[in-house]
Length: 301
Image (cartoon, rainbow, N blue to C red; front, top):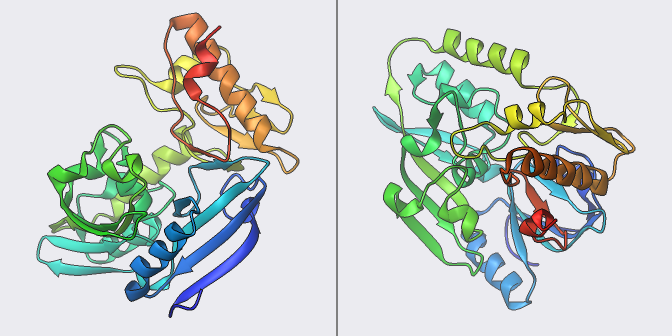
């Protein structure tokens, strides 16, 4: 693929691409660092009939043991930056890691996004998932988004056009890759203490030690998946090399010998317990890639 600023790798192990560190081979990993190449590269891939999945930091993804017969599309160095665009706004590029964004905001005393402290992943992934914590979500701060479809068409969307919902957006629904996000910020006092408090809270209440991919299930309306799973007796349950965290029942961790199927089977058991005990259907927050599975089918018991 002869485009400037583009690297194409073949037959990449998924365990090198995701925080679970498990899964089979991915046919192609294409990394784009030149903004002028983005649309052309995607159009060429689409013309070859290959499915494409935008890849951020791989921190909310489970890839099948059989791998993925398609393309993971990743943003390179050019898209890992942030800049001040006005007194009350920044432009963060899609490949920028959230911890680097928080460091920039801390250094420049810009508040509004401290709730993202400790969340793994990238700006692009956070916008696509409408990442949130501590009663706030990124959609509350978005001004506009520059993105590209998997047909190679550029989009410039205002906040209302992004179709944000709970852990949802037009970017996730339609597999649209976020290139940049213009975000409102508030200049003022130091945010170091607030960031430290959020990080301490996460470390104490949520973040387990090991290989995992964040919250496994979305919270059902008016309730919490972790609470439901805890009350369903899931805490500490193990299937093969995968086990539910003793710290928080909505986290699944993977040992070095774990398979993606171990994680998936544990997810199914968790969802079925919640459904059997409380009549509540839990749906994955992590992205399942390469599985031949319709999630609603598991509730047909």
